[in-house]
Image (cartoon, rainbow, N blue to C red; front, side, top):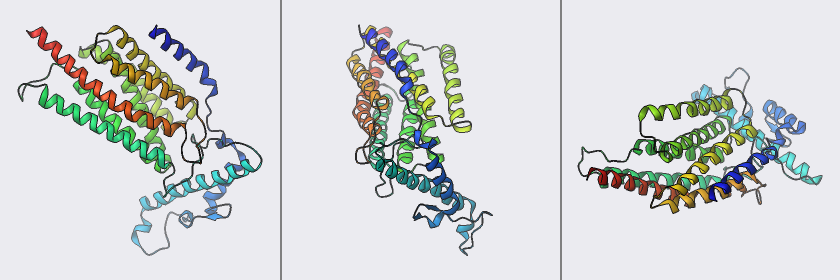
Length: 342
């Protein structure tokens, strides 16, 4: 019955693919004109930015040496682009509201109000909390593996997935770090790092869900399973970074990967006799419901809190439960080996 539920959920998601919005604001001619003009003049309407006035030859008339450095000039250009996007977006949204139109997305994101220079302060805070939860979970897992599940310092545990969870922890913390950076200031390189890190985490999460659920322990078999998924993940990341940042296509890919691993974990939880399967059910069910916030997206309330920020909030308690399950799984795997040895 549970499997039927998740299969139905997957079918519904595929049916909803046509509803994904790939940033309608980017195609607005008035927004494009404002943005192009701002990059040339340093002004978006009546708002001007002194740091946007960079000579075309890449040099600075100021006597300070650091003002002539290419890195400094690149950062000024990056900030200029971000400020132009932000203020042109505000200008267009004000005009749209005047004519009775609702907000639309720009560069894959809803229009937000900056607070203390942070573009999405609520998402930044929740991303930082998720990073902290993953660090705490990984640290407690590391302590468990190194000091509690080993009888001797030079003896390995019987848990076959330790290295995979270490990699998962690194990818998770890296993803939430760049999420916090990207939500604090949207620039081209922070956007690419955030999207790339998220895709890398999802791709590896799918791999580890297959390896653990089907108890794949042989190294050759692991490579056989992981190779095509890694190839697809890397190809998708290269596509986003070097060809086109297609927000709609990226959303579809991420949803398919996320739902696939949820289905795998749900299937395994249903047929296994794992003592902590209730934790797995909690994460799978909560993750599926949280994913609806990404699908049924809505504009930010008061320009601060949107569905994406709420999704970040829901993953905080789920992360704690998830790492609790991982630690229980390590204990379970080690105890099973001990029973076999005896």
